[in-house]
Amino acid sequence: MLSTRILHLALILCLFFVLFFASFSLRATPLTRTPTAAIDLNRASVQQLVRLPGIGPKRAEEIIHRRSKRAFQHPRELLRMKGIGAKTYRRLAPWIFVQPTRRTKPSVEAPTPP
Image (cartoon, rainbow, N blue to C red; front, side, top):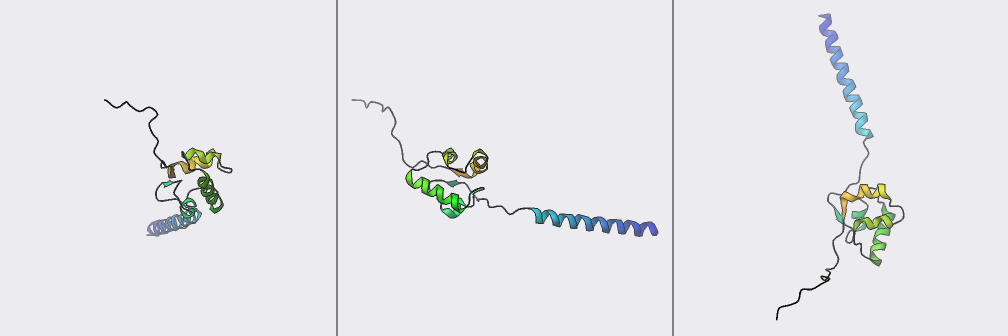
């Protein structure tokens, strides 16, 4: 009888500790701002850019300003921007792409048959 009560008390304490420490781990989990799909650097809005990891409102405005001068040809061009290094780029890479802005002509055209 005494051992049954001790067993029940031990189970209740274990359950309490599991729930107690689980609540701490849930509170310690940081909220992340991640996009739901990859975005095109040449067409993304400020709101879309700030959802990227490591990109805040100021950096998003800088990206838009940069692309207004010249469209991005490759996502790695972000590395040329101040404040975006290799570590930030590695976090961004899965979430960004660049859609070609214009079609290029073939460098050598095949002659047309007479």
